[in-house]
Length: 311
Length: 307
Image (cartoon, rainbow over all chains, first blue to last red; front, side, top):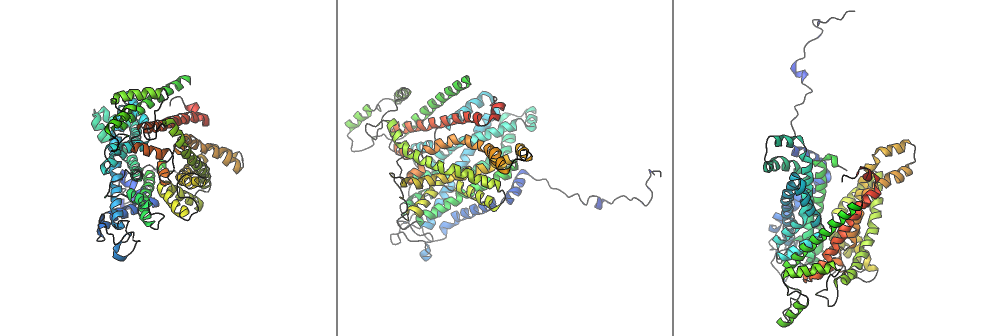
């Protein structure tokens, strides 16, 4: 039984290329955002939340034009009408005969606007502060972080109230006040991200190539923390919307004749036990939907961005 | 340890000083004075401003306020005659604390129990229901819960809808305040318990042949409590120091309501006093958390030192 090193003719044949690569699929490279989206799609509650948010956003823009009523036009013939199909007062009217359908969607627009802009301001400021603190480290970091520790010692609500009064109540003042009281969390998050990214090889490589700090932050650091920052935004927006509603409760909300969901809810409180609970419950439901959807979406996004954090 | 405590204490003092300074100048930026009333004649107004030292320049007022605070004098209210800030805070603290304590008693144990059940029945309908409840319960704004309770329960005359006085007035606000904490702790307990159940020492306990109750209560339960215990000081202090929203909705004369009133009427001393009160509570809570960590979890003491 000797082993024949040569291939006997006819016993072995070379494979043709088709069979050889039959099992080798052509894998496309998946970018970070595609990967996140792929995982997010599997998170059913998050997908429902996106659907809810898109629907509400649609109504916010289309709703006010769906009937012929104006948000601020008062009509004393139809005071405190219950929700009805008649005269297209689908959400009823308030104590001044204003159409609640139009007012609710306009109010939701103001609330969303406040939430989104305040969150974006938080992000911008938080990123600038956090990146500088984390990147330079040492004494700069120490001082900047001690400052944040001190700032969070003052209750948010006090800062917000004081700022709204100082800046004179209005949508701009509310946005600024909410953003000022909320940036510290974002700054801390960004700093943590920078600290963990700082020791990675690609940063070292960039630095040894002589990359300037400003470019380093813009090109290498910030794009690499988009995930956690996005997750934080989806929690900041509902917080801002909530904060605006709280301001409305103490009379510092959006000034009349404009309305936000917060002021609508606050106005509705007067009629809660006097036969017109819908004046409160319709805007409250929309607000709850928005806030809950953002939080649940944020949960799903967090799992999708970093599956290791999944609990 | 002594040196650490001393440094810590020094930082607390500096923190308080910065907070006093920032909020003092912020309050002075507010438009108007505590005595904005057209019916008050010019001369009387000047006298009033002089009596409270409001005619001095702002830096002078600041130095004066700081010296007074160091000596434990937080000033008198501009709004309520002859009432000093300490008395007002003490008075308003009671309703806030009563509601807060009730809310804590309802929410924390229930949250821990629900979270534990969910973790032990992972993947079952009970688990999904608990998680669903926790997510929604935490996301729903507290004022929506508060007004819904008002409508459903007070609207049917079962309990008073607002105001303060008897024990009946405590129930609804406490529940409204408790819901989100209940949800929060249920979720926290579930995830902690799941994590602990996956640890090696639980496997060891199982392979030693310990019974399930012993494993769950002696090993898993106690270890999953660690983050809950260390989160408690901050939560407790925040809860008992009054929820502005809940107090506003139920018209409760607590710290939150007082804060809004004092700021809106430019009652500087009371607003400053409350800001300081909250800040001190927060700083003390953080301090307790630090100490608790090393008490509850010896692993941190062994590994510690660096942080």
